[in-house]
Image (cartoon, rainbow, N blue to C red; front, side, top):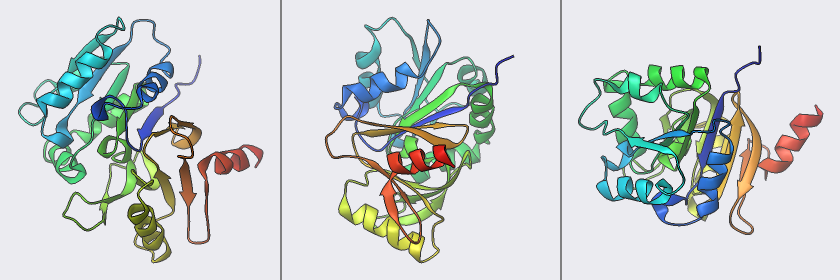
Length: 232
């Protein structure tokens, strides 16, 4: 019996909710082996913004997929049945802290973990990229970038939008000052595929945009970091 591959796809910025980088959406779909893909969208971080939900349906409706969304801001009753019947879950961006509070108040993290263990692909952009980590650098508690806790499916820390100099500089500083553990920074236009909690592929839709592994001593391209790990 084949071992279930547990996949998470973290997108630093872009894709259908930003109306850009269409090939990032295609990269997510390409990781699913199902022939009749069931994809579910969660816009919790944007308080179930109808505009983003419409972007979801407009982007995928012609691709012969089974599409649905769930408004967690107003209803959680049948969420476990909904999420565990999907091939891909895609989480939109917005306020990371607000989204994680909704999950915690309703004890929903267990369902994401169950979906993950089952081999359902967990994916998302911005808030939906970083929520899976132990720690996140986020501006969702105000204008200042601060560490907040994620749901611990991937060890270490993460920040999206690292093509913004202020963000990656703060991320590096927090790691050097022990406010964050070593982690991964993901530029806009870049997706990182994690398999069983480890980065395995970096996909970029924009020239000179990348993802990085950062610890106290170095910042290196995540592509190089993955290659080194392959040889060890």
